Image 1: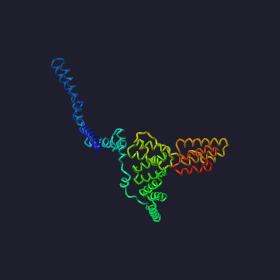
Image 2: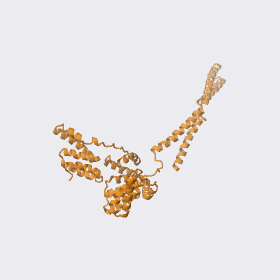
Image 3: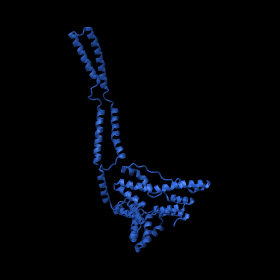
Image 4: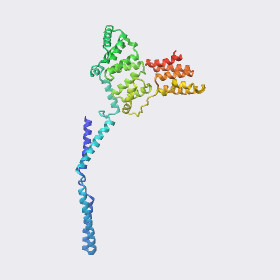
Length: 410
């Protein structure tokens, strides 16, 4: 509030001084015609003195006096005209003052809103980092965040029979607190109903029962439920779940996305940008977190002080040989067909190695290598795919089908 008060006073003060100058016009300024008039009067007096001393005769004195008098009359008329134009019309002055206020005050606030950071203190980098650390340490708990939100709304379209089954499942889990499968089912179905608080409580039970056998996916699911229950806020409890996820699987996309989001929320856009930029580069376009990152990362880069250009979405249909490409290649000679397929395979293989890609692209690469008779290379690609999609069983299944067709799944 102090900042806005000071800037408002300065802007209004500067505008007032300029408005006063416009209002007063040329008051106090001496017109050029006034100086000319004084000179001519001095010249006329000088002619009279020279005639009195006999320096010039009467005819010359009269001729000079007449000419100087004519110039005096012209200068006096010019002086009168300048004085009458010294002030602009009242309406024009009012219009200029209003326009000045709009441009100076309104324009300044408009540009500050777009280019500045309202509400963000002008602090040194070390001070900002320290403030971010304090904000991270003192941010609200999961319980506080959940309490600040409206009560969860259960899916109104859920059939009553389904709701009755969920109620029976709750009773069964309560009676059998050591039933891991029951707790997993309850967490999943509570989440489907939109009851995120009950869902993460059930998922916490799953992790507790599994103990050291809890997987990275278990913790990632738990963190996801916590963030959703808190309305998109990454609480300290969710942060601990994310840390355990990354400890077990450093490549987990859900944990990496929410960790970047947490850094953004506590005032560290620099760390958040680095995390998201790398995750975006390594993720296929169909990953669940990609749309959210693409929507925010350019603004995040600006806040982090980084020049960044959002990469275009990759088009899987243009990145490697499709079944139609391979079929068309059958019309070529055996040597030309092999060269064509090898060129497309090499292009796709290089891109997947450097930028990553969708499971369909990995499957296409394995199939194309099979056409070329390079089963050993296809087997290596399959082994690499298992590492890339280790946390995405559904995606890995797509690649496995192609590898199974080629007989390289062992």
